[in-house]
Image: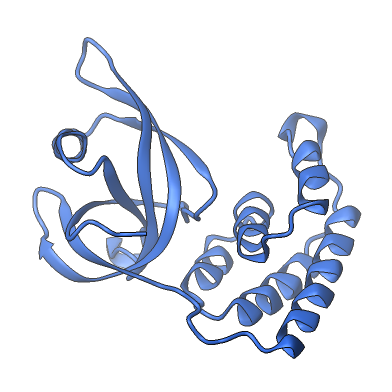
Length: 197
């Protein structure tokens, strides 16, 4: 996938945005209204980064594509952002009124030997086993997600969906988002899912 040279960055508390996720947002702050207008005129993309202590943004965030956007008479907008990629946001082009960064993709580019694939399958089986033990209230709406995950063959998507839907601690989700190696992401997820009661 070709990334835009520059994207706006929305910094949100408690929010780690993964690929393969849909994120509903209400845009009301003037700076983010401006960011949204620029995105709609250009690539229709912007990044979401977790707000760290002292209001600092994380250096790694999720890049998303605006799938739908409805602007209200009062100037606010409701939109759906589709997660496309994990990106490094180190190179800032602008800080005010909103951040603009030159995004760099975070990808596991090393070759995957057959032994890794066996490890991946074993870790996925263990993750799914732990998921089955998690009690989910019906109103959470994650029962169908559990069924879907049983048949998902894309391990990258599985990590993103499980981490984004089932892990509650933003620091744990952020650690998985920042890890490039798929094997390590699966290991981290397996450990963190096993600790959910």
